[in-house]
Length: 326
Image 1 (tube, one colour):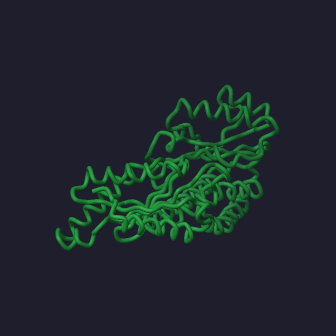
Image 2 (image 1 turned 180 degrees about the horizontal axis):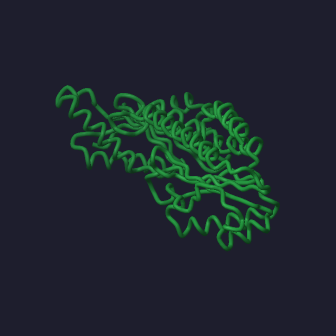
Image 3 (image 1 turned 90 degrees about the vertical axis):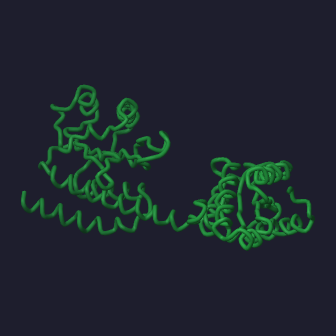
C-alpha cells in the first residue's frame, strides 16, 4: 500500500507539471482524463462543470465534459441520468460522494446502470475555484482496487488549482483588452475579437460591416469644458454605441475619440443604421455630434487593415460633407 501510494503521488506530480501549459478548461479535462486512465485504473468518467459563477442562467448552467470509457451505447443512458439530476438540482455538487462507493451501496437506478456497464465502484469529487464549487469529477472502475480516496481527492484538488489559474489568466487577458474609461474593448481587444470573428464566420452567412465613429470637434469640447467633461462624453457615447448593437457584434474604442463597431447587416441598410446612431447621440448628448464611415468585409477589403482604410475614407468624406446630423 505504501509503495502504491508513493507511486501515485509521484505520478500526480509528474503529470500535473504539464497542466499549467493548457489554455482552456477542456484541454485540462482531457489531460486529466488521459492521466487517470493510464496511471490510476479509472476505466470511465466525466467532468461536470459550469464556466461562469455569475451571469445569465444559461452561462451558469452545468455541462458534461470529456466523457471517456463508457461501453458503446451506454453514454446516452448515463448522460440522461446525469442531466436529469442537473435539471432538478441547481447545484449538483452536494451529491458528490468524496469517496469510492461500491455497487452494492449505489442508489437504485445508478446501481442498475453500473451493473449493466460492469462497474464495481464509482466516486465523485467536487471541483472548486477558490472556495466556490463549480462542478464535479466522476470516476468509475470495473475492477476492485485499493481504496485510494485520498489520492483521488488530491488529483481533483490539483485539477481545481489549474482551473483557478486558467480563470485568473482569462480574467487578466480580458482586462488587458478593455478600455478602462468606457469599459468596452480597447484597440487590442477589438482587433483580437474582430479577427477571431472573421476567422470563424461561416462563408456566405451574410454581410459583416466595419464602421468607424468619430466625435466631432472633441478637442474643442475638452478645451472649452475640461477633460472630465470630455471623459463623460466618451463614456456616454460608448454606452449609446453599445446599446445599438446586438449580441455577437463587437464594439471598441480604437483610440482617443474614435470608436469602431463590427456588426452583421445587409449593406443597403447600413446608412439608415448609421443615421439612427447619429440621431441617438444628438438626442442624448447635448451639443455632441459624430461622423461615421463604414465598409463591407470581403467586398472592400479582406484584412482588417484594408477594411479600416475603406471605412476611414468614408469617415473623412462624411466630415468634409458638412452633412452631419446636428
